[in-house]
Amino acid sequence: AGLGVMGGPMAGHLIRAGHVVTGFNRTHSKTVEWAAANQGVAAATIAEAVADADALLLCVGRDADVFDTITAALPHLKPGALIIDHTTI
Image 1 (cartoon, rainbow, N blue to C red):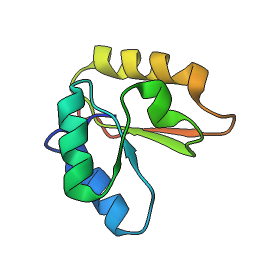
Image 2 (cartoon, one colour; image 1 turned 30 degrees about the vertical axis):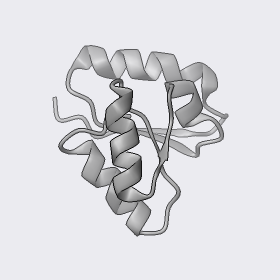
Image 3 (cartoon, helix red, strand yellow; image 1 turned 180 degrees about the vertical axis):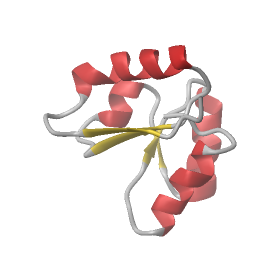
């Protein structure tokens, strides 16, 4: 979650390393643009983004964004999935 200046390139590097990455950004048009540029998968919702995911990686802007993203994702994460926060706040 979070495909901005830091999150977008980080997710792109994961794809180029051979991982399947489903991206989500609160501004869906950014998600679609990122997916097209990086051969990623664009999710319309956080629930869709984390469905069957082994990990949720997030890089968002504020403490409240971290809280909101994780709170929204938790009910949809499979047991044992990792949450990795790259936010620099």
